[in-house]
Amino acid sequence: MGDVVGEAAVGGFAGGGGGLCAVGEGSGIAAGQHATGDGFGVALYSAELAGDEDAGVGAELMVRTLLDIREEAVIPQPQDHLRASLAPILRKEDGRIDFSQSAPEIYNRLRGFQPWPGAYTNFRGRQLLICSARVVEHSAVRIPGTLLVDNNQLLACCRASVLELLEVQPEGKKRMVARDFINGYRPQTGEELGVA
Image 1 (cartoon, rainbow, N blue to C red):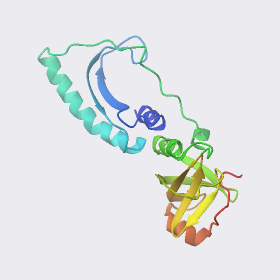
Image 2 (cartoon, rainbow, N blue to C red):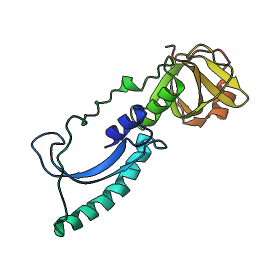
Image 3 (tube, rainbow, N blue to C red):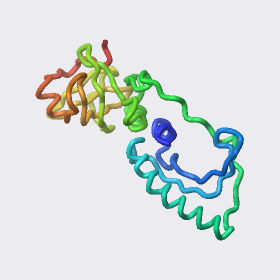
């Protein structure tokens, strides 16, 4: 389920791209009839957190569905195969950040690719995992892939937008907040991300 919710987050389905349903047996992938279902928005979730939400919603849905089956109140509905799709199998390279995308697009990928494959780039020739970030307004948008260091903010320029890197994990090191990264690595405004 995490890959499906992850794909919803990557695709930017902020208003409600996640959900669960009880499905009967069928002869193909997700081919059974749907008995009941619950949807929830993925706007504030990473795939990892949405998986936690799935567990609670799924447990409630299962109890309700079993009670409905006992009461013969279930009316199975066929799946709309024109609207159904499979989530792609994720590969490690899917997590590589392309700063020619907009900050909201990269943010959605970050949310969708947690915990695996993660969202990463290179900094000074080494891998830098982006653990958390947010889209911010900033007047000094530069070439995509360049850093802006503004007080204790670590900002990555994207296509016509800026992403604030809140937590990062340098290769071989522990996860750290941006302020600690700035104090330890001393990144400079104008340094490039993504260079191997």
